[in-house]
Image 1 (cartoon, rainbow, N blue to C red):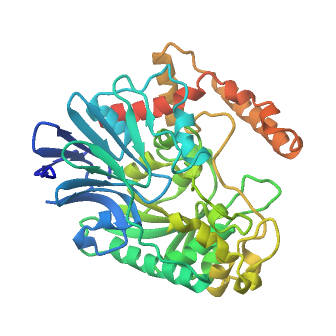
Image 2: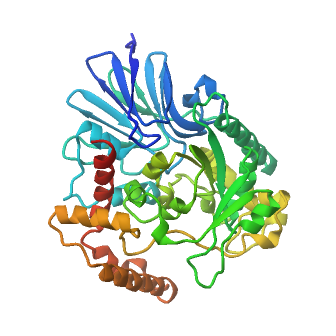
Image 3: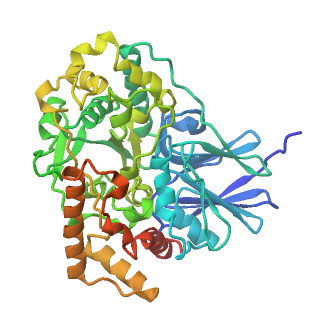
Length: 487
């Protein structure tokens, strides 16, 4: 006979926590679960959620869909279901310590509430987190060590508590078959409309507005077209590309074609917001460009074209194992800022190989360029929406915040890191050496990529990998947030 879960949810509001952070704590010996949470978690007697999903908001059926962006907790029959985001850029954490079970959408939060700490002597945290991209959704590193029990990581799948143990389960697969382009386009339109309705439901206590990132690249333009079916009217764009010879990357002209209001930003590293929180996501500098934007208050549903370079690229075929996007692992930043992030190419990701084949169909030839940068699905979405061919998808540009030398850019984060290193007895590098190292290592990386491109990657000189503080950045950022919010 199945164990009958009779748990009660006891909610404990923590006003000083990040808007969307939560930790669920329960004992193996009692019948209640305490949910400690930030001020904008939506709560009801049987569920708690910080997400946008396909379906009617009031029903709280975020556990019954594979299009859910954010996270939540659902009491259902004789189970408690912890729902993760349907992306490779967000995750759930869980552990068991001394007969207590902890589940959370935030690493600093679960560290703070459980009393655990990361290990300074462990040098592989950033590499473990990067495994979601390097190894894939089914092969990533599933746990990381602490000074107590290991912390388990769950991407995409849900977690079920059956009264005795936590078990990882697959999300329901609600994706239809795609026989031609129109079947896929209709899926995107319908899903977008449903997500938009959920996000803008009048039953929400905290209003959500829609926003899309836009550039001159294929994926963001196609994503903007899809976002309009959700009711999105606003876009943001970074003007300057990190490539000196490829020109500006502003999506303002494209936004005009799509009747979107567009706000443009310069990529100024000194203006990254909540930079420590971005480092806490993956322990690397990627994703900091996303912190440049001004997001809507109190909450924003953000559309990204991440991973379109695989799902929508004509030359990519037969994807068996999707990967996450290392440059969009901004999970802690989004909890503080109040963002729900979706990557449109990830919709129906378990059918990615089927979607990829659509690029090769005879009907897609009018939107096929035959170049090294060729994404017929994305081009057709954009051109049929009224975006001229000449405005996008010509040269692949880059506005990412990756740099080979890992060190924070803003004064606040720099001070925070220096204080942390000093507490460990490590003398921080002087400011002028940080600047000089950043310039020099960036030059070496450019030489490796553009002059020594014929040399095996493993044989190239990469002096930045020997930085003595590189492995500490993930620990620093997560312990800093833990001490700021959860102690």
